Image (tube, rainbow, N blue to C red):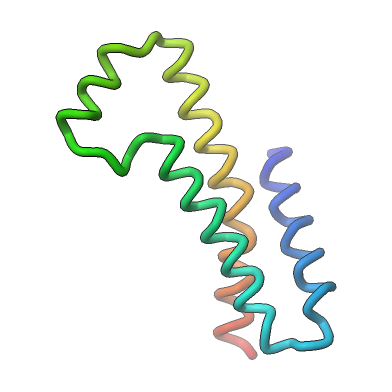
Amino acid sequence: MKYFLIGILLSVVALCITVIGIDKVVLVNGGIGLFFLALSMITSGSLVSGDRMRANFTSETMEERHKRTSVSMRLVLLGLPNIVAAACFLYFF
């Protein structure tokens, strides 16, 4: 929940920064959201082939796997409010 609230705060800060140019809100919030989403995909290991994923799964410990998935989930929670805000501004404005 803490990371989701930080993501909302990032979205509000981006909105305040781009209040002068309201047309840039979608670009800035969407960029921040996609950045965190891309980092989440990289840290989760979902962008590798099946053979590489199986090798990574057998070579890492349960603690490493838990840490990797928690980091990627935190990054998703940081980026999700920004993507939602960008979609809302794109749809309504």
